[in-house]
Picture 1 (cartoon, rainbow, N blue to C red):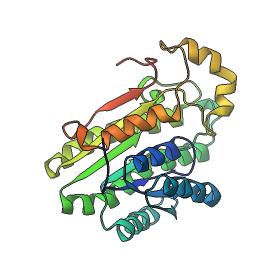
Picture 2: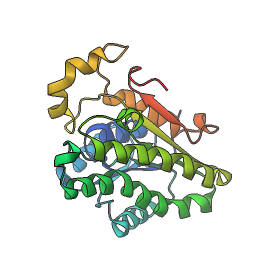
Picture 3: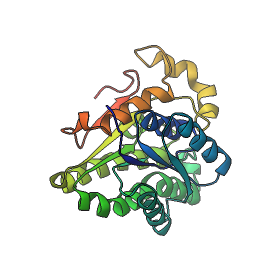
Picture 4: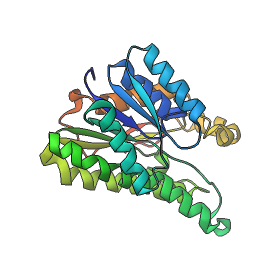
Length: 248
């Protein structure tokens, strides 16, 4: 599953699962554009870690929930690497609350960050990928998008939307040798989830047949596979990396 000569963009790549994905793609030889929104220090640290692995990387600030910012991000990737082979739509956030008490602003923010950003970045990436007749898109959804989760109507809706987006786009672009797949992580400890997991970690482990929490690396390995030519005949699929929690 080597990615030598490939250029990848990872949105939300400065921390957590995104950073793990960026590092794994780099470990396999890809040049990586680490997108971030508000943590330049974390993004710079990720770039330095990638360079220590012997690959090249840059950090690009962009609020990818905005179309013009997403377009600038993709242009920066082309300027950096001369092409774009891999897009990982990982940018995401949570604003958990029961729907009866959820402010409209929290709904809108989560949908924009988790779902509209995938539209923005994928739309911008399609032109160079179609021109070169090659591309790999991997969307980071969630088991919450498969089974739902109380207190997460906004998050679950955004992640379920990513699954429909993945399947539909895969049908649109398959003829151009572009694959579009999704990875659905289970409970993975990160900065984003630590507060939630502190309250429900024991129940989460009990609900997982493998009897443990997942790791960032577990997710990154799955993404690297789908981004590689070893997965050239796989498209429109959702790969759950959840220890068996949600069996489809």
